[in-house]
Figure 1 (cartoon, rainbow, N blue to C red):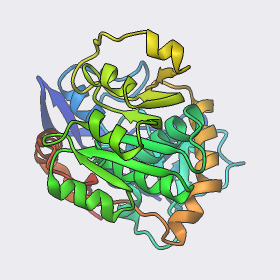
Figure 2 (cartoon, one colour):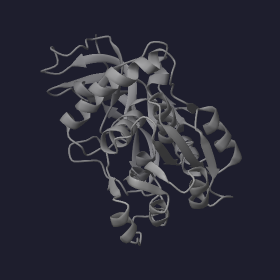
Figure 3 (tube, rainbow, N blue to C red):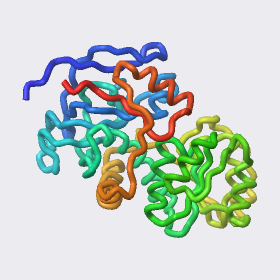
Length: 332
């Protein structure tokens, strides 16, 4: 297949997103080149645009951490992989997704689940890798336990609700409007708390008869941290995956000791290839069948053309979305 020399891409210029033309990258060892069909828009992209989350060393400066598309070139060391030229895949990438072509580690690629379109598959990697690695691997959520998700209506939240319910846990979410709360309940959440109208600490203790929740997935940080401690059951686990309200918090250490609490956290982008490959294997084994049979599905709020990336970021920053935001690339 003869590839063009250049591609359209979105670059960050002085805090803004600009459409530009770039050379098409060449796959290195254990990499594949993907003709991008769609790319997911995520909060780390917004942070990168603002200069708060620089790309890791060696990663593309083009934003975009998840894509779907067609494999059009193979690098050295990929012949033993299950993927070949022409395969439709989705992939977690360390950058470069807002472009016509993008490189991906072959071990971070996953097949498009049966029943999903290639565009829909772009909504999977970032959120499913994040939720699985933090809720199930790091926090070890178990059947019958209760998960509290702050920001239940976003891409991470709608994924966490569905996965936790699929593995027979209870789910309580917080969200900022009645509509968002209702949508989360429709997705399977057992209870939804409008944090603009209700004190989530009081509501959690009411809903759990003051026993508290077992796992908390928090993207807010700051003053949520000491409040989270008041919602946690004995031996509960708090996983911090973002800090939208800030990184600093003052907490009381005594309940951590008395209730044997665990506070942990992670970021995904900078983790090594082996770590991400391990998550990909687990997802394909345990989660992709649930996508194929319709038990869970990506929730997509809006789709924009590549040259509308700024509008996609505006929607993300306004927090008006429920589910994922995607960029679609031209088919030609």
